[in-house]
View (tube, rainbow, N blue to C red):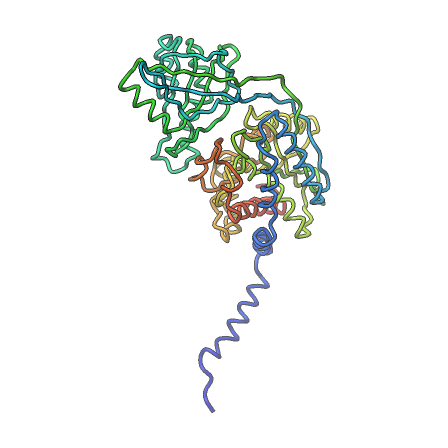
Length: 460
């Protein structure tokens, strides 16, 4: 009779060990893995994003934005959430011109058109346009130092992203003041208009729009973004001819404010219904494309958090709420109104998680709390490791939820990989086709796991 091999002797032990491990595995880990599988196999957020994008651009105050709000309400109702409702919000209405253009004008030469787009809330130029010499600067401080020497001229902000910075969100933060505050700084000294280099890492001919924070006490000058290639060309030509003239003609305009809506859906808590865990994104977008990454992805991921848990027959201890905020791009008005109503209703938001960085590969979460509290949240990293989304760092939550800060809400932001975000941010390239299905679904899974853990354990 042959002696049993050592492998045959070991196999029963291995099976027994595996069985014991399965029986004693952390229930929260089992749930995290279940959420991941459900998101990947039976996820709905990618299809939902396709539907949302088919509504068209969702510029604040537009018919498209309101159409999308009605879509969001109907979608959450179709998923059987306990309560779904619209929250009225009064928002600005800005209309992009149909014949906006910027050209380089040189004596004896044919005008050279620059790829451009008007910036949000910019007034139009005079009907016949304006022409003026252009002066290139790289910071707001430089305009302050020039003072009234920019009077009657077009100020050209040409500070590029710092390519030594790995996180492109930080690159954006280091350049975006040119667009948001630059026009008012230039207007303070009597500038005729403003051009801004587009906020992107890419060198291409696609302009990127965005909002200008005009100061009421300062003349509002026409402002436009030009593509990075156009910025390079203009800078090069200015070196050869500092007296170069730019022609601007824009018929964009601001109209009277209108009533729009935040969209809110929730599943009630079984033990602590007065404690609210919020997930959210902003429903409005810029009008150059479909707003798939900014912030259609955040919208459908927030809906998917509640849908996933409901599909797993999970009964939350606390109330889970998905909020689709209106007018984040134009002043964060929906977030302000939501917080105002929360205070009036004496609601207790224990945590809020915002997705507003695109639908790319998940990396983790940033948490807007003290180092010691962030360290406690880091004890949950293992639950995100199966999808490589276990980065938990101290950082900002998001514009919309920032107005809950005063209530002591634990605020966090879902963090996907940032490298491709500014390829499409506020540009005509932000389309449904630019979103990867699996990356979007994995992001929804990461947000759902965080929501589940807070619901099970409360906040630290």
